[in-house]
Image (cartoon, rainbow, N blue to C red; front, side, top):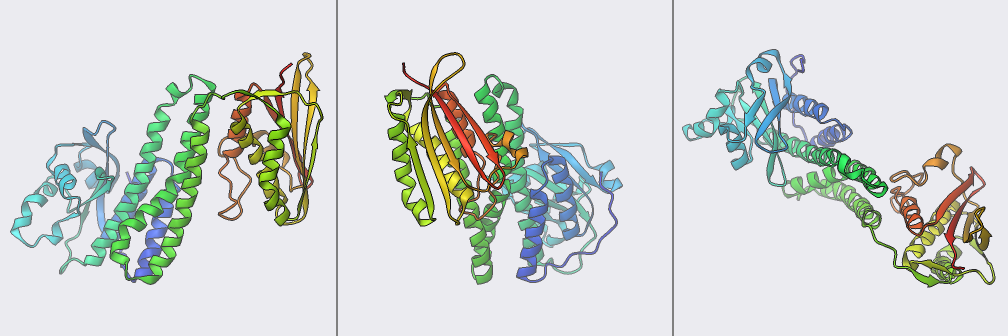
Amino acid sequence: MIDRAPQETIPTGSVSESLRRLTQFSREIGEITDIRAVAERVLSGLSETAQGRQGSFYLSAHEHTNFRRLAAQGSDHTASAPPTLAADHPLVRQLTQHRQILDRSAAPHAALDGPLQPLDGLCASIAIPLINRGRLIAFVLLRSDPASGEPDPAHREFLTAMAQSAANVLDSLLIFEDLHQSQTLMRRTDRLRSLETIAGGFAHEIRNPLTSIKTFIQLAPDRKDDDEFMRDFSQVVLDDVYRIERLIQEILDYARYMEPKLTEEDVNEIVSSCLYFIDVKARHRAITIEKELAAELPRVMLDRQQIKQVLLNLFLNSMDAIGESCGMLRVRTNRIMKPEGDVWVQIEVEDTGCGIPADNLERVFDPFFTTKHGSEESEGTGLGLAIAHQIVRDHRGDIHVQSVEGAGTTFLIHLPAIV
């Protein structure tokens, strides 16, 4: 239960001020990972805007048969509002059907008494639906003092925008909760445990971008004549779309299990092919490429495309670590003998970049761990090395990293050779 001192109505203000407040509200709830905490913050935010002294927040149960109260504000409302409301309750049916705010102060005509009648039995004067993907996922009941005069349409529009932003955040959290509940099943194999980590990381990574995208789409029709709003917010949305696209592609690469299609291959030829691919970019950055390929290297059974994906990821990471200044990327291949007497092929990728801090070395292959936080173009998603690690393991090989911060990094790939 939330007990707060009465607050004055927050004026809707100018378009820019409304956008600022909406962005702040969306950011605050977007940073909360606990559903109950989000419910409390949404309830307090809507009640402050609507000047509701008492209120309750109801969330749809997983089976969608009822709505349970997650948060309450004001002792009287806590005592009178029921802990659950069935999906066939008259108020729930009204909100599901009309998907609009029900406000007692906005009903001067008798024809509206029917839809508003369910409010009377719930000690409420306002019901605010939270709709996402055409479904009522939650609603807020508020009891406010009688308003004088006609309700302000801008005020009602702002409440609707806040509710929509809250619905977007809640929907993402519910998806994350559903994914989290499947963890028992997903722990059956090592690969499914990795997918569990990715599912949770994916939900966390895209929650805020999705909120801004959905909010923009829903507000754009009413703000289409506001050039400043359309220009600034559309750029934010475009950046978020690019971020999600990169995440989805990398997650598909990682999560879609593909049995390697093994063929007998020349590792030196694959290395040369990948280096040719990055040669133009390296010369543009004044990065020197040194290639030291062992003669008479044993051939390896591998999936050519998957190993190329691993090597290109390592090469591009090295170039990002070197940056725009001059540097060197050295690639070597060697025939090595394991302690057990087995013959392996080693691929060594060395750079003179910024290096990796010692505390991070053990985490570089973890999904969603990244040390790249630069521009939108080079910002890392933390899946590239996780994908590379999984591919090498699928080839019955291993991959290791050595690094000195400020001096450079070396990756070593070992693949079993054909003998």
